[in-house]
Image (cartoon, rainbow, N blue to C red; front, side):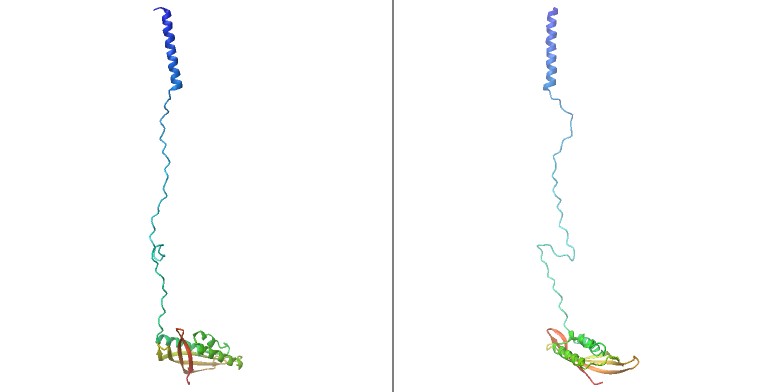
Length: 205
């Protein structure tokens, strides 16, 4: 084969090579190195807390029946209870000082019926008008010794208690004192559902 033919073959091969290289460069997509797959974002559901167990003493949750709190009813006054109150009343009522401004009576008015309160106010007013001398001390200290229920009627709301007391009379200096025993009858009346002192009677010494 002559040189002319070989030259044509070489030119054609060169063109084919150039076209192949150009095709590879411009039209072939090189695959990129494998990259880790991108996971789609996961929406996290809010955690649901289980209902907490109810603790003792806490109010019931909505939708549950709530038991109303009913205050306890006061116990009915008994005869011996009233007798103890009468003894305490007698000690305070019978303890007097000319320097206490009749505090022994004023402090007990909350335990008196309206009738007894009227008597107490009149007694204090009359005593104050007499302007008792207070320079020289005079007083009586009363101590309940025993009590006795003379009458107790829960239906009618009437009661009568006898209280035996020991009373010590003091005048001037503390050494000038004398002791005597004196009973007092305390009558109760139930007023608006409450037992109150209605009358008092000091007995003879």
